[in-house]
Length: 387
Image 1 (cartoon, rainbow, N blue to C red):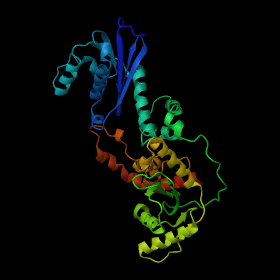
Image 2: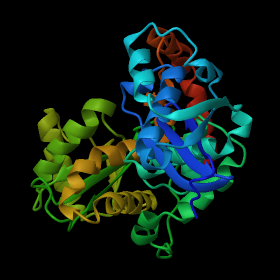
Image 3: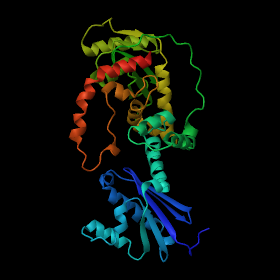
Image 4: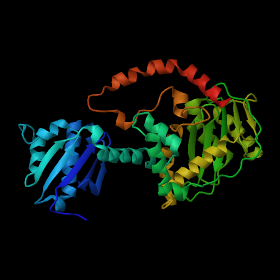
């Protein structure tokens, strides 16, 4: 029960991507507040972000605080002396003016003691890396690997596991059990990326932007995938045109295609493809009417992703297809021991939180040269995991 005869305490914290605060009284929480930061605010200094957290908390809990003494706990030491400092910028004048009329005291509290607010910041990270289109409502391992590229805190895996276990979106849209796989015929392990691919279709989707099907194409070595939206009925010529536009222009001509689609359709597809290329049918490029299971796994991942973000608006699935492709290719795969993106490019993709004010993009780009040189090694590691 709130006691207005006792002082209130606001504990705040800020991260690269958000701010958080908790209102307490006698160490008992009364209310929580968290907010994501826009891209422009992510470039602010730590001082400014911490100040923004204080102002947002005071504004949110104004009815509790007006006319009562309260304390503000922050792990930004310089904020303790904010009122005593000489105000020299318009921003500082604005901040101080918004706190006029309140009876407060700012108390410096080191980060290791500021566990409540730090926990709020971690919840914001979990929301970004799990609930967002980039996070894709992934499982524990994939979410852990994605966060670990940039952040670490004690008991991180346990907190991720607890957060995902309580995610209602995952509970509603992910099947608890998958169908048992049939007997698969082992296939030779590819030696080069995009030499050997698997191709499949997802049909029967609700019409979205005039599309109701997805062509799924996967590189069997790197596991890198492309998801191409289609309209049904589609002909072999349409698929060939889509294949050239979405696959060949980026990765070149595959040596073989694995698919369990209709053999007659695939035969027509090859003929249309070579018509487009202006060459005769090249028998060194082959089609195998079978599957290694990779397409089924990828289709299931894609379908779960789209359900998580469009279950309330199923006709919006095409809006999320590009994000689904990015999520899939930047997610950790046990079979290769890394992400498909890393396997293909020898580096992880840049993330928005990595860039801070004063950080040089030139220095970041300079790191690409040794990464490219290490690509053959990445291929060897990937192939070894597949074996």
